[in-house]
Length: 115
Image (cartoon, rainbow, N blue to C red):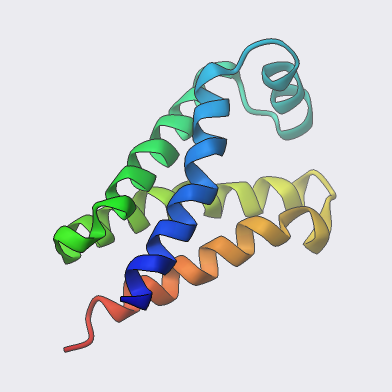
């Protein structure tokens, strides 16, 4: 039961951010482009990965395949986010949230292999 709550927590944290990236209107797109050297199309693709991964995590009660697919999609984006934050000079403080969610997701992924 706790693993589903953890997946729902991560999914809810990531889903909203994914939708914001998909909308990518106005200042957010320009900010990402200048700060992280990511163009508008790349940002939208990351948003779709996050949103779809979050939906898979919400559906994780249906099976391990949904959990693994969701974690893979989200961790791909979070891994890039951590690297981009570090390259932008934000250090640990700037990448703390992405690192936290990446760690929780990794533990959840490893748990799917437990019998």
